[in-house]
Image (cartoon, rainbow, N blue to C red; front, side, top):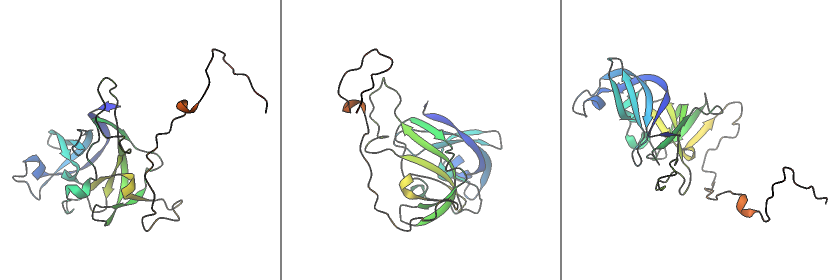
Length: 208
């Protein structure tokens, strides 16, 4: 797993120019760019790197700095993200079963907004030489699925805020909270066995 920075499936969009001028000017103006990398700094939102059409490569911009439609209403950071990064160890996947799917995202206010799946950010702790002080697995695992939203913006949301749509499969989509409870068990098997191993390649078969 990569540490801190990870390449992305690059996509072309616009960066809002106020994010290039420390929010002092550039409002309502845009620059074409290719977003190509993500940085994961614990307790900050995922931050994205963009190569601008003027030849500048700009690092660590939040997701609400970008849009694919210039007419998009600027999104609040609290709507765009639901969680900060859980550790500096980040993995990026485009999950095949989710590729090409649309979904409804439930914002912090409870409103629904729709978008198309792009890829997934996932966190863990990989440096065995350093004490694990992060929360990527405590009390449960969280990931962030990144979406191209119908509003013209981009969002990054966890599983429990997403209702997926697959017309050939999801014939019984939920319309309210189904009441699922978070599973906080740690599933192991080696601590449940009794007896000793030996150096035989094949173990004896016992009848009955």
